[in-house]
Length: 89
Image 1 (cartoon, rainbow, N blue to C red):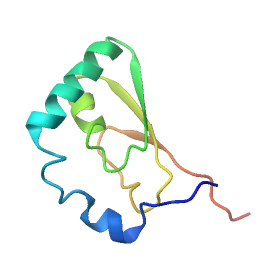
Image 2: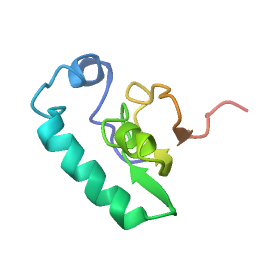
Image 3: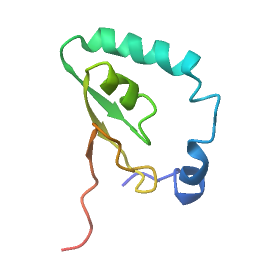
Image 4: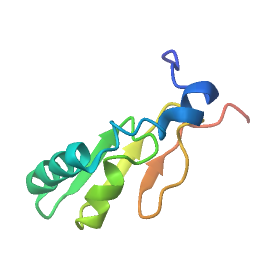
């Protein structure tokens, strides 16, 4: 398993980075990706808290995501997430 650099400390403050969530940044990126997806689905690697996935979903794109970090992998409305298999038996 690759190293996880997005643990609890990073995840706790990730959404507080207002520049990264600025609509002037997110909305053009989401629109570009929605245009690429057209009527298809999107797969986001490192979906995190849904910064890009949620605006895509609002545009009608079916979004699937993969997230390595359990701390970053919080449920987002309308987004399906592929969870890492548990190590338990």
